Image 1 (tube, rainbow, N blue to C red):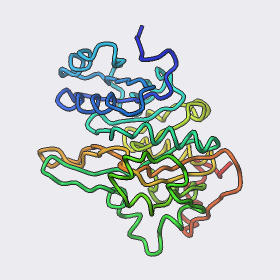
Image 2 (cartoon, rainbow, N blue to C red):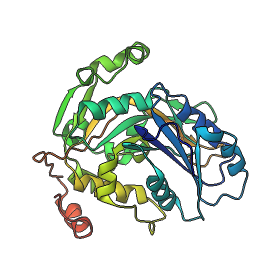
Image 3 (tube, one colour):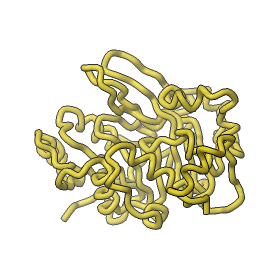
Image 4 (cartoon, rainbow, N blue to C red):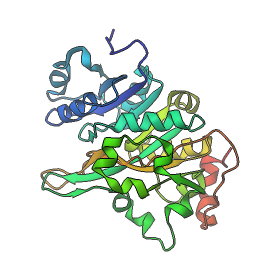
Length: 300
C-alpha cells in the first residue's frame, strides 16, 4: 500500500499529528533532511479536519501517510509503531523539528552499545518570539532538577566521555566544542523515574525488538501516556545512556502563548536501556516508590 525509501529501512521516524496543517511541513522537512539516509518517514493523521492530508500527500512517496479515526496521541503512536518497518523507531511531534544529524548520532550510539535498548537526547527549546535555549532539558524538567543534590551522577550509576563513544561527527564537534568535555551517562533509572521525570520521549530512539516485547501504549491515558510508556520501558530493561547532543528543537510556545512542542534534542542526551543486569538505582524517596510499585511492579 505504501512505497518506502527501502524495503527494510534502518530507522522509522513516526510523526503523529492532528490539525497541524500549518506546521507539519516543517517537521517533515526536518525529518527528510537528515545526514543519515536509510530511514522512512511515517505521518499518522489522527482524524484531522483541516488540510493536513493535502499537505502530507504533496510529498508523494517520500512520506508514508496513514489516516486513522481520532483516538488521541497514544493511539496515533501505536498506529505508527504498527506501520513502522525500521530496526529503530523514533518519534517526532508534528510541530517540532529534528536537527540534521539527529538520526546519525542516535544510530551510531545504538550500534556502539548493542545491549542498549533506547537512546534519549538533549533538546533545544524555542518559541515563535525568539526564545532559544540550546540545552533545555533541565529547564523543561525543572521540578526534578531543583532538588538538592540531584545530578546526572546521582541519577545514573555510570558515565563515559562522550567523545569515547565515537558517535559525534567532526562537524558537530566543530559547531559545539563543549561536547569534548561532556559525558554520556548510563545505567538503570527505573526507581528514579517512578518519582522524577528524567527521560523525554520526543528525544528518544528505541530498538524495534524492545517495542515489540513491551507491547502497545495505554490508549486510555489521554494525558501523559508517554510517561507511563517510559516507566514500563525502564522497568523492562536495564541501563540508560544519556549523551549530551541536541537531537531536535522543541517548540515551547505558540504565537498565542500556549505551550507546544518543537525541536527536541540538540546533543544526544541518550538514555540507553540495556538488557544486561546489575545496575540498579535506589531512589531516596522510598514511600513514593512503594506507592507506585503496585501499578508497575519491581524492576525485572
